[in-house]
Image (tube, rainbow, N blue to C red; front, side, top):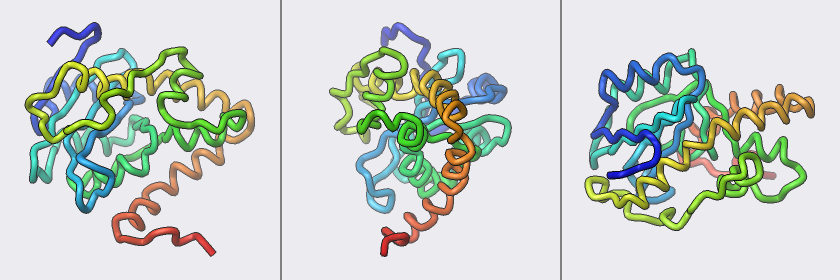
Length: 210
């Protein structure tokens, strides 16, 4: 498949060589594609990774798969910050299906809401356009990701683009948070995410409401 950026596709887990390539990175952009938005019902189909050099890996997760040892090692390694957009969902599905407890974490959606208070729009498309000038094509967002063996070029490009620009956005958001004296607040929010995910997976909703 002809892509204008480096993209490697794996089945079930990273290869040892790819793991070694990603392992030294101090930051990694991560995203997932699923069959829906309920971890207890909808399975994980893809995991996408991008390093600061722009190398993208797409891992196809099989139906019923419960382990991906090299991916787990990479996402739980303390030496690299894992950057997500709306980390709460991705962390939940990774923990529920593959037993991966990702850390440390940076969520660009939380960071955007704390830093970009001039905008009411914090979706990935709006965020990337505002901070990098790149307009993402979201036409493949609602796709049958379960048919992972036969993904179209448009689907693979969509999946890859969700991580390709995330590290650039993260760097700008962190600079904005530091400038506005909100970086420590953002870090506290990121630290709280694993507790929120435990509540989500246990079936508790809106526990902080009145």
